[in-house]
Length: 532
Ligand code: N01
Image 1 (cartoon, rainbow, N blue to C red):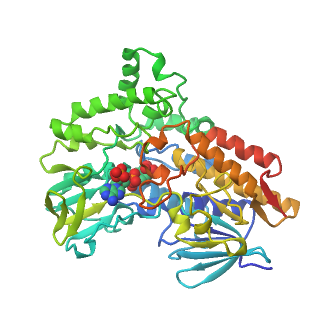
Image 2 (cartoon, rainbow, N blue to C red):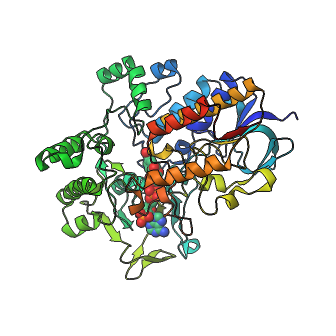
């Protein structure tokens, strides 16, 4: 059957743009992207909240597929802010002439597989229908917004915003009493910036978080020149490291060094800033509780040294979960912000929010008058963006039903019963635990190589087998037991969404091991997949 497209791609973020390039320009297929927003950029299109900035460094939080692109683009600072990354992705769309095959303001609402014709029919909110042979989900891991159901929100007479649906014209906080709910990576980035502008900021904290300074700074011209000269080697390092970062990971255990030596390592990395604190300190801090305790205690000491009011400092010190068992934030002056006269920290763990009122919000014990409420309350991560579409595979089976007890995938790439549907950075892949562009390029390359292989072999249908999928789901779970992730209530395990099944969502075995699995599967003629 002649379909409208060979490949439809849902989403025009880092994944969708690269997928379009690979499918259209490298494979020569008829490919099209459907994107809900009115611009490209995905995460970086939606998340325009104050302080939005990448926690990975600019020179490696970028595509590696084009040396020309890499050489011509100029990053301005160590961690690029949202407008700069959005400008980069727009540049990519222009440079590779991608826009002519991207349809904006087109939200996909359903996708149905026709078992006989082996064709996907995709329907959009604008009531259009497209048929395609291959369907690529590039919807992102953190795009289904979570606004908690707190009674009374509809009564609130002030303004309220979720950080990932921020108004494009910005929000003026001048003279305003602002309440911010949520102290994940987003809330931690937004807090200092909002505090600097608002009359008063009240941060409503349910769980304190461990944050390490980012130490953002302009890129110095000499350093940038060196990076450009050594880009290939740096990219290779990102592909060879577990987290997709160009650092040589530490081989030392935190338990094999003296207290002085360990503290010196933490002090040095605290000064340097960024994720290196996790990946470059000791190999076991995310896996061994005793090793983890040393990092956690170091950060708590830093919080107590920084925050002048001892009661506030104690409230900011996490004690109920290991460091980095939740996604570790990095910050610019987060803890310092609580020394400002116009900032108050409220513990909503001991005194939860009861309702939102016309003029603010109320906990069990107190009322807070607010002009603006900011929800930095995160996402229905990894599965939400897929399940918010009605996806039906072979035999009309709904993905939502198949995943009612948690997502099941083979390598995070395909789902048994859903032929020719590929999920870029899907659940069961390391994605969110890896520097994302590195994870995305690896996935898109694997998928497009697979499709090229199918064309070569003259087959038109690929599907994960149930047996291989079961084995991968078991492996993902077993790998997670080697980490401390089950000891925290985080979105990594779906614990942030009421009613969501508690299941480890990303693959925690590391990018290197994961790549080996993917490469080996491909080398064996896509073992674990049925091709026909
Ligand atoms: O969301 P989160 P996020 N009542 O889920 C609280 C990526 N990211 O948007 O911990 C009260 O981490 C919740 O409290 P608790 C990054 O991968 C990347 O901050 O569940 N509070 C928590 O404090 C990150 O991990 C970058 O008790 C409620 C917060 O809201 C991911 O996005 C920057 C609540 C949510 O934290 C998500 O981060 C920013 C309720 N009902 C983010 N529900 C860059 O690299 C939730 N909370 C640029």
